[in-house]
Image (cartoon, rainbow, N blue to C red; front, top):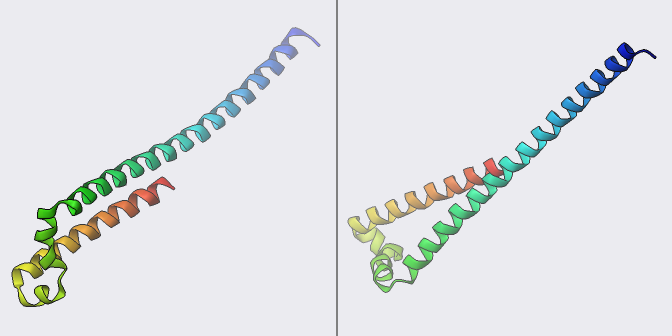
Length: 106
């Protein structure tokens, strides 16, 4: 074998190594993206849960919410019905965002 043949073999081996390295990096970037999305999803829903828990434990908030969750009040008082509707819309929006985050993370 002469030096030209050895150089050609070296170039082929080098090219194969570059392709394998690029493939490995693509897999690592994909895994990192999924992990980042999952972490973002977890922190977002965890913070939302903490906020809701602190609100529900607050006596003033509970007194404010009692007529809203009472079915009879919702049916007889239009302002309470509007509050209930707004609360349900916000709750639905949060669930949609959570689902979108979960879907994007997988």
